[in-house]
Image (cartoon, rainbow, N blue to C red; front, side, top):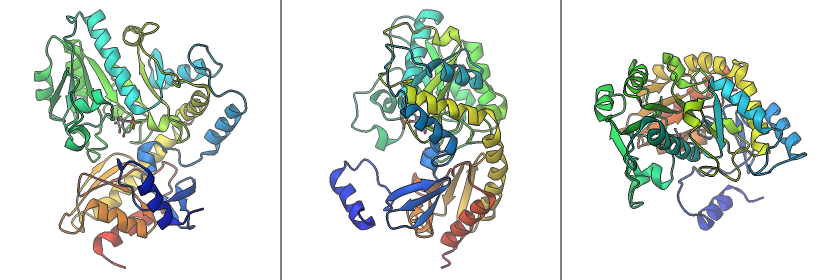
Length: 402
Ligand SMILES: Cc1ncc(COP(=O)(O)O)c(C=O)c1O
């Protein structure tokens, strides 16, 4: 096995540089801990951008994967397999929706939502052909396809990838008046993240999500909640929308749905919305495959216990209390909910990248975003002691103690 410097060099040599990873080479993991090729251990405080909510190699998920690998892995949707309806029913019940449409990546769930909303607009709402528009928020992150980057406001994500898909109106995030003003007779949907993860774990003002729900209902517009990063226990509820008692018309799910084992995404909505799709109009060779369904069903069952949501809520309080202690001691702002936090580091001290490098040297893996911000999103299996350990390392990095 290559040691770290050689493995880093090879990765640089043989891959497109569309990422700027920390120079750490992981070879195994369990729970909240990672081990690199040189045997060093790290506490995972990113959890694959929330794809690892249940930790690395959760025994129940691994057992489901092994069991399924020994029986059936792929059929395509040309045939029905025995895991399919089980998964769709249990996820629909978790979401309290009629129907589920499984895909693979988060971006595919977003594309699915956009297509369904447009078709619903033409067939149900009566929008004239080709005129549908969707209202989205500044600072959004919904994925990397050409349609999705068409309405990104991040120049890195968007520039030089045109021509762009039309039909999107961008409004400031958290501004209900702006959102209401952007809706016209041809608006079919509002697509937002209930908390903007990539933007730095930005929580909208209280009342915003209920306001979006109200406006969407009044104007006969679908509320599409991208819960791909915020959902499935991350914030202390199954869905981030639930903190304000909001039920969107469609949940967009991904990341943790695959249990950190396989890419699984899905949208969940009622039959009056998802029912607009007919055979041949949308699909995916791998979407809803047996292995994905077997793992994701166990994910839904883990969530149905409520244990992970509780852990996130309780331990999140501890994390945020500890982070608030660091305000004025290297941190200038802290945001978030549950075991999910965005921290703004005093730019006079260091960049987010530098902070993550120093944390790495201290055995903590986290990820910077937008200059001086760090995101913390540890697996929900992290313990109180491990949170205290991460906070102590962060304090040492911020105060420059050795
Ligand atoms: C809110 C949100 N939506 C969509 C996506 C895209 O998911 P994927 O990378 O699986 O395509 C992400 C990924 O970070 C996300 O955070």
